[in-house]
Image 1: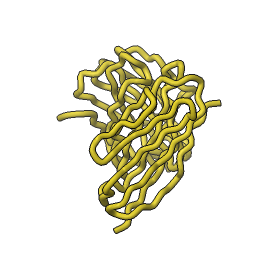
Image 2: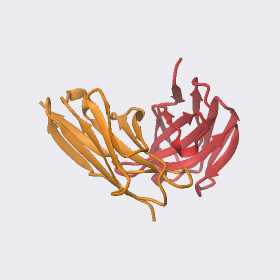
Image 3: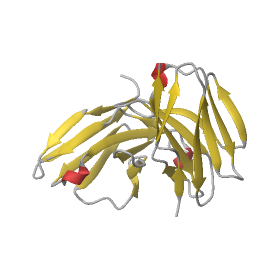
Amino acid sequence: GQNIDQPTEMTATEGAIVQINCTYQTSGFNGLFWYQQHAGEAPTFLSYNVLDGLEEKGRFSSFLSRSKGYSYLLLKELQMKDSASYLCAVVDSNYQLIWGAGTKLIIKP
Amino acid sequence: ETGVTQTPRHLVMGMTNKKSLKCEQHLGHNAMYWYKQSAKKPLELMFVYNFKEQTENNSVPSRFSPECPNSSHLFLHLHTLQPEDSALYLCASSQGTSGGADTQYFGPGTRLTVL
């Protein structure tokens, strides 16, 4: 079967750095998405990786290793507004989107 | 208005009621989606429409009935629901050119409670 694993919950301190991991086992691979979802709000697009390596977008970076079935989202200089759930999703060989259950990130002052 | 809008934002209904959820996208997209989101579970894709044609129905019970009159509007008609159907129902849209590889734009969701 197809599976996406990410930690259920993480806690970090304001101003620090946090890395949210996502591992996947899917039938084929055509890209990996990260979305952010604040409580009670819509998920919003953060990043899309299809090639190996690190892509940086301001305070957020996303890394992909296709050979290891692994990605991470790196958040720097954490702010209270970064408290949210972070959803990892993989596009499989049939261009179906397989979702992880999300990681709830709690930022403490 | 911009983006993807959903109404109502909150809905409480009895098991014998009939209600409808509405979604509208103002992005010029061709694909629209209904998802169910339950606590601590992955998003569950329910239905996909591309150019108004239903392209996916993930074994959703018949008590959920989608309708897509045009590329901008999507409805989810609800009848005879069960308490386990209580969840956040999210609508999304995308360009519709790359299947799951399209970036999806989500509405804020309808929080549904079935009593």
